[in-house]
Image (cartoon, rainbow, N blue to C red):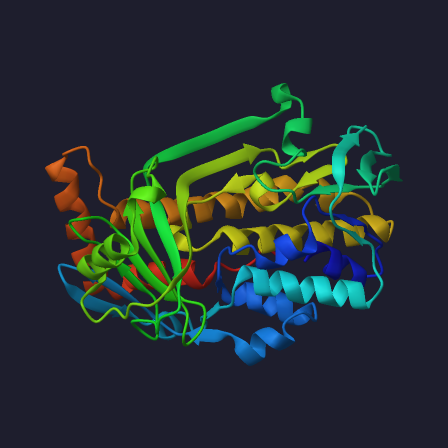
Length: 373
């Protein structure tokens, strides 16, 4: 996304990808886009297929005590909506448009290292096709995820880490089955949280709360479908499971998001629990801020926006962390035996569905907060 937006502004970039193209394009990840993310992709010229194939949702359901309560997202936010479009599909579109334009995109790179990030001329070295490569840069964008090399390249003394690991995880499946609903269902149940979403009219994406150290081998298809039916209802359609996995639940922020000429974006700088569907959207928000800063810099208009990049991004990051934490603690079962907090969560849900003001707060955050500037 960053490379495409820079290209639109006449700024050259080289993309280095450690994995193969096949791996990147087939890796199943998030699938819910905020209104602003869709607008950004549209403005960047990578949303043609999205507009043809994606599913637009104007609401969602909250299910607790066995009853559904619809949240009218569009009605509460002046017409904004969310869009279901798999992250790997968006990546396919961005790869295709970059390769069609003949722009540098290197897959299967090894031994990537960054150097001299505190100077005005940082370097990247890597190995590809058996040869050593060197790239002299003006700026390095660390869009390499939580386990990448860029954040660890910042001296530990210059980095502050905020981290919370939740005492549960999600067991997620992709199944060839008709979705249970036209919109997402967030369910709070005595057995634990469940989420029903989809990738198309025939492919369901389903999640259920499980232990963080869950052994997938103990979860047969029958056990998975049985747990989902108890939490989501008997109308859930069963089908072949195409993919399954366990997703850890974590909140993580690294401050600052800039060191010298290295700028962190996306999961390299922050992780949110998936309950609020914010990971990919927060990364796109980072990119928007970074593009503005680099456009100013390369136009020789100074470094003011580069200097404020971290603060601008972190203002949104912490608001999104708050929302994701709130959704997570509200809807999940905690096994600490605290009956008081359990009643508080149910009381909050009761209040939420009865208050237009409270529902508006949820809807505004869910469809995406306004971008800075």
